[in-house]
Image (cartoon, rainbow, N blue to C red; front, side):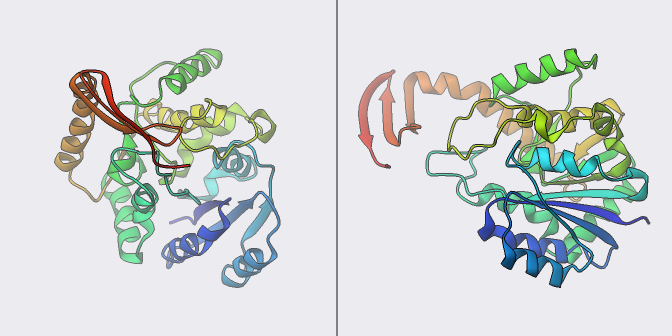
Length: 290
C-alpha cells in the first residue's frame, strides 16, 4: 500500500489537539502530513514538528475556508504517490442559532471526526475500501448529503460552475463539512481544473446564514467528481440499510416540515430571538441570545 496523504487545515487554534489525536490514530499506516494555517502560531507549529517531524507546515491566506488550502496542497503533490487522502480541519461548534440535521454544538464535528476516533475504527475504514471497490470516498453516514435541500443558492452556483467547465449534471452526494477519506487518484479531475487560492473569497466567521462562495461550490463538486468517475460516497462500516433509512428520514422531514410549519413553528432566528407561531400567527417573539 502506498502512503496516505493527510491534509489538515488549522483555523480554530483551540481544536488542534483534537485533530492531533485523529492524526495519531492513522498510524501504523504510513502517511505524509501537510498542515496549513492562516497565521504563524509558534507553539502549535513546534508541537506539530515534534510529534510529526516530517510534516510540511505552510501559512496561507485566509481564503475559501478549509477548501482553498486543501486545493492549494493538491496542486503541489503527485496523486500517484498515494493510496488515499485524508482531509481534516478544525470544524467549529455550531452556534446557538444553528442546526445541521438535528445536530447542535459540537455534534457535527464529533460525527465528522468519528472515522479517526481510534486506530481500530480508522483501520476498518481502510479495509472497507479494499472490500468495496465501488466506494470512492468515505465519511460518517450522517454527514453524507444525498439530497442537497438546505442550501439552494449553493445548488444553483454548482449548476453554473458545471456549465462553465462543460461538465455534466449528475445525481451525486457530498460530505457536509468536508472531512473524509478518499481514493487519491480520483482527485486528478480536481487538479485538472487548476483552481488557485486567489480564486477564492476571503473567509468569514459569521454564524447562521452566509453568502455562497466558491468554497461551497467546491464542497459539492468534490462529491460530483466521485460519482462522475463511477464511484460513490458511503460509510463502509455501517450497513447500507441503516444508511438508507437515515437518509430517507432526513428527506421526508424536509418534505413534511413545510406542512407542519403551517400549523406550528418554533425556532430561533438569526438575530437570536425565540419565535413561536401557530397557524402562522406569532404568539411569542422573545430575545434570548445577544
